[in-house]
Image 1: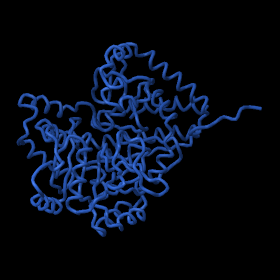
Image 2: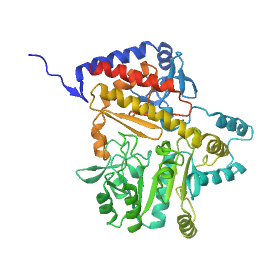
Image 3: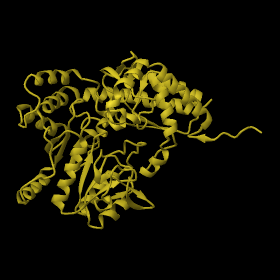
Length: 457
């Protein structure tokens, strides 16, 4: 009797294991210089990498990048790769956009940091308002910092202790967001390093697209703010149901909570982010990653009335440390890059080009999946595309967690890289930049088809 195959995401698990081994060996064999350099020089770093998540790439060892330009990377072994990861949104407009590179060179001659504003800072504030709406702005270095500061403001102004986040959410490394649902109850996420505080005293968790669970949390009277991405990302991507964001706005207002929209990844949605494209109305707006064209920068803004409320609170608090702010934030290099990016790079013309390319990628991947009968689906939000190794569409973080197939995804990632295409390491996300060419998109679709032809033979 023939062996009945064990399937994972519709693929014979033994076949998947064999292909994964072959592709890992091919990657390593093609990069002798990289392997030798890592063996000789990586030992000075904790666990041999400068940042711990660099070990999370599915490849056997990290690539060492020699050059990045437009939507291409070149490693030290000379391999040129079409880059659809783009720094996981940090370089969404391409590597070193020319206006930003010029701004860096010009500002470098005038100093890198001095804890004082510049005329460019004044112009950046005007441009941020023009692009994202009527907010009173502050500058941070990462979106994690921006979210952390926004949460402090929300608690200060409302006098309430908790924030409400969604199961499976992503908001950087903000402690308060590191909770999840277990049997309907909020718990601290397992696996957090050195965690000693019970995070359920700081946050509550609801399911995305479930307004009833949001209202149940708000009814406790403990919620200072709802913190959400417009679309769930950094997981298997989940789109909002029609009316969900309108419902969040109404419930937040009804129960005296603030609404914080974190556009760190969904800035790919179009000009002004998902908030601008879909007319959302947050009390606090956060965006980071690519807002300054790749220079580490994040911004967060308060609606004018909220800003006035916070200023009154701030005037009455005891003097001393606020728990907000970092020395290198709001440095002149950030403002030089912000102004260049907002004026010359983050344009309607570039977004139109990105969306056209992303639609081409979305349609091509969808066509391949259907041709092979794979029980998978594809999702697109503006310039951001993701294939998901499970049927769709997904409704919430619980479903997104169940759809995550690490073994399949790791094999696909390395296989794509061996065929000259780099996608995001932690999920199946791809971005199309203004510099991405049609032929690069078509190469990715062809590589995806080549892999699925073998996996689903």
